[in-house]
Image (cartoon, rainbow, N blue to C red; front, side, top):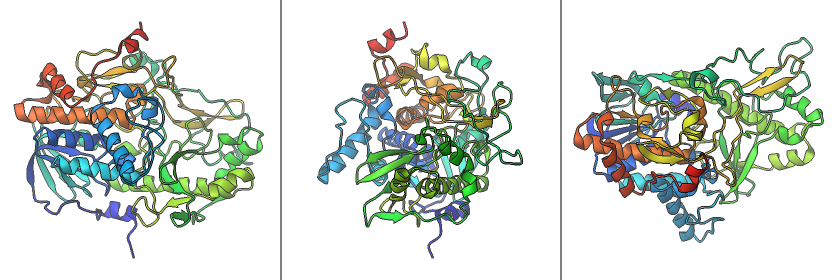
Length: 538
């Protein structure tokens, strides 16, 4: 009988991409085969470095290979996204064209149509990039420790091998390598006062619901997170995790939904009351985006009151052990399956919605697991490094120029829900939501330069590590940086910097920025803001 993906993960039995696991020396070791990690490894390999890409899961490409099928660049200024981000999409476009499939967009046209693709196509393109760059891939490698001498990492140890390197890149969604290397980090939200951020701390952007979130005994219903939001002083909450599920209605490729074994209709009493309150039924729903192959990408809805995100259940994930994360992963999967079943079958849901949701099945040709469930949970936020420079709300809204630019970000800051709590008037409210704010007259956020210093640890803590994903940023700033297009830009720049530092044999903090920027421009990274970006904040 085929083992489940979860058991493979917990027991360390995931596939090993290449056979030899004896200790080996590399110029650059990248931990985390996220899109940023793939870009870092590819960029370092193309720069002539000997590169290892080490990943705990049996998948390369992170969320983009696991259901995230247009990666949010539709809310970015695509004129600022060059380098490997653009190359990836050009390769996707060429793959579909070769097979006679016409996509509803052209990569050469930098508008805001979704650039969609199927997850298995994304994963194949990522593998092609890595193979051509000579990168050695090691999957099924859960990080155990980092061995340091002074401020330098000498090697990392996983549950299946050891990887020595001159330079390291932590491209994991969680920041596991930076934590193992004893680099300072934070989890959770700052207060408004800490960095002077109006969007920090508690945020009440969604309307309050007037009906009771309690049962007959006065106990909070399931899906509520706490009796109160607590003081507005900063906290350990992070935005909700969820999934990007690839589904289809195509006969032969659709694996039908079945009632989850532990499904309890009482779990969704809060949603049932909302639907019966006369409110718009779309407040209890998922977001569904069409993608190639007659499939859809199913997402948590940031604008919904109750959706596929299990609010409050991910707070422990960043610092949890692999075994603890496996339990959290399963809780999120169980909830998502049960919520889809609720939407497709509960009498409180309008009949048209029930008929639509229940007609979808899981795409058989995606996700090589027995039930075709995506292996990567949608981690929107985890650890955040406290490095050489902390990006804050000001850096993504007003103080947008930097002397050490390694790319451009332009996704509008947002945050999915962090809490769901009762109100003093007997109702309840979702807390923590930040809705995207676009630059006037555009469909993207305020573009800003990404500083090299933000991916650097403090020199005394580590001098051969670069962190492009869990970079040094506040919760608010990460709400803009946290999308794959920006992380891919940062990943490529980190890979170029790592190869450069290995060649010069200097701490990453001592790389000459003008020379680094010159190398980045050669590989088509966009480092400069356009005149209209600068005019917007004057």
